[in-house]
Image (tube, rainbow, N blue to C red; front, side, top):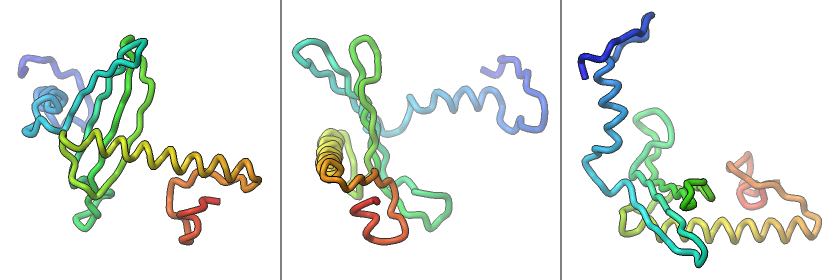
Length: 145
């Protein structure tokens, strides 16, 4: 790879082309093959492909004192390659290929329950919005108004 031409100019040339190319392919050569999992299901009409990715002990922010969380992501694609669904979940449970599917199923079930609750309350005139943060008071965690 050292034979690739380097046509970059300016001061942002800290990494060699060889390092950049190897870094791009490094995702395929992780030491633990358990960070990626696949599943193929039949819906009765077509196949759906589930791709699960996960990471353990990822910091939530920069800094040595950052809280470490475990996270997983699911992407469902059709046989034609069209993305049908994508979501990510954070947990304090350690994630492995044995448990990633169950954690995603639990996360999707929890999301469905919360979404149904929101729809019922909105139908009764409360007009709540989704809450993606904790806000300034504990009540915003539960009601997100």
